[in-house]
Image 1 (cartoon, helix red, strand yellow):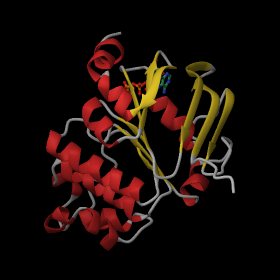
Image 2: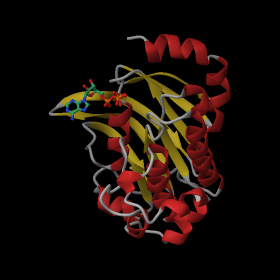
Image 3: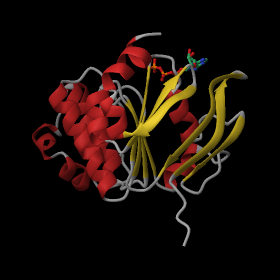
Image 4: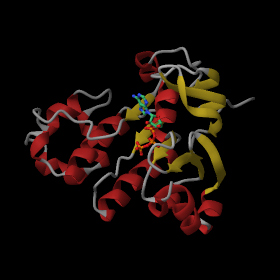
Length: 230
Ligand code: ATP
């Protein structure tokens, strides 16, 4: 049997108002795999996730995601098993933790099972939780739905390294249970420690790709040339 990868993009070009921000990307992510997107600010990482989520239409090329072509809208993709953690804290600050979890597609109990340390805080409004707790709430809600593909945009932004590791380990667990994951991450070492492969973007193009092991061996050079610079 032929196993179709969860993400299969060929020559994917997308952008805003007719101007491409990503150019001719070839990406492939299979079930059980974590791919990390690395690159400087403005290199096109978020745009890539939006194109994979179906929020931006390809201007050229193809993006097959979970068996949906690029023309399928995000709500249909969600039903077919997409979990999208967008940049920023994806929680409703005025609702309690429990209420936030109940809005998910999975059960609140399953969400708590992923992050048991949240339980004592779930009666509080999400706005009163720490940044790390908010992000666990958002990720727990997504993981409880058992998505087949998770897109996560800088989920660790501004969080302490220990929390970053906790969140990335949870994503690794989801991949080990069969999800495909595409991760945008600034913490290059932490990300490569859980990822299987990576793509380094520069000005909207793939400048470098390799296994996590290969990229990790060059992590300092990658950080210097492609991430901190430009
Ligand atoms: P960051 O780390 O800053 O989020 P990024 O790698 O995710 O960076 P993108 O957000 O994908 O980069 O941006 C890629 C390019 O597209 C940039 O030149 C940016 O200015 C442009 N861009 C992003 N969002 C929009 C938008 N809504 N309208 C027009 N141009 C945009």
